[in-house]
Image (cartoon, rainbow, N blue to C red; front, top):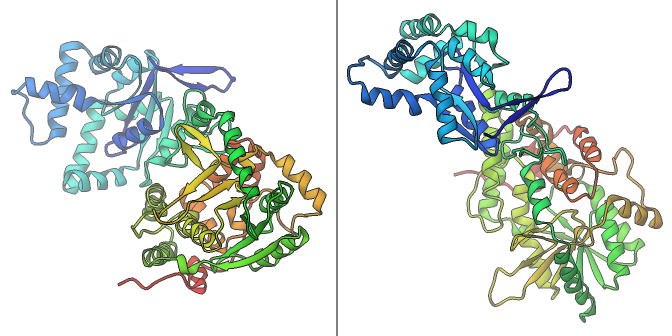
Length: 525
């Protein structure tokens, strides 16, 4: 059987065969179990009703009752009388050994003090979900269609039959599930098991798309560890350097913001022998100092610079998405909005592709911006007869043939040339120390009030306006995955990333005000 671990107060590691989730009626046992199954690799959700109660009901037509809950109680009594007080606990462990031997099981739908005691002795973590009776009664009324009197009666019967309050007294962990988001208590349980944060990067399971494996790594770090191949970069570097021999006034475009990464990349491009054109995209919501600082850095390095307004690349569906995003961030804080934010965060991952034709509100601002920027990279490069766009991004461009790569090919049209996007720091496997050496050499200094490592809210006013509301509603910083990838790639340390994520960027303008000033929204029909 797979096993979960918890570090006890004396520092010793305790091992569990699985998790058994008990609780008051309508406390969210199944919902939380499903969240855990999704976030614990190698786990299996075992619902007692599906595995035991329903099969018993099919074989026992004599068991009658007005509701499924009432018939389930009769099955509980029948099994207890036939096989003993802890019958269901024993049957569940038998199912675990017989059907799910290699998996860490998460049991829901189980009740009864004796079953809890038995499973605890057998090495299962006993978790009790607690919700105030008034809230539980309300949930039963909504879920089962009960009257208030029927819901109150159900509550009392559960306590009488299953000794629910006594289960709470022996539980290893008690979680409050009065909130609407089941991921909150699930995250607390994973923290208890030591499955909360990646041991390599800053990703943690507050983020609904992150899971931690048995080795303590998030899925990104685990994949990077297994798929990273230095040979890929040797081939890509040779391909990249060949562009330096191409003719024309410019043989590469270099994106520059005046910050540490892009400035160091522009310096490297000159040293590589390229004739680069430095450019800074204008989306309408970048800080003014970006443009003046970019022009200054380019001039210092003897490179031509252009400020390029890319709002012409914003499609109608993008404008609607900007509008929907502004409306989303206008909404007041609530449990309902928190659940919606987390759901939209997951949904946004499916819609940030440049090819996406959907308009949705985006919680993570970079995902919406990316739909515009990628098209602009291609369009502006082709317009100038250039096939290479080089960026100071310290992570991979993507996975290609099961390898992490530093170069991405863009060719949206058959009758037009390809443009290659290069993440130069990742291609040459540079580290933050290498970048700092270049910056000292050319006299670059951090602007007043800025950290060396910053989240995207430092330079993007769209991200800055969204930052604090997003982090409060999500439970984690919206830029944590990007900085996490820089840690995964060993460009920066985990401590440096955490310091950047802790910083709060004060800003008095709303998301709506920023986007309307930028002129990128559209009225909804």
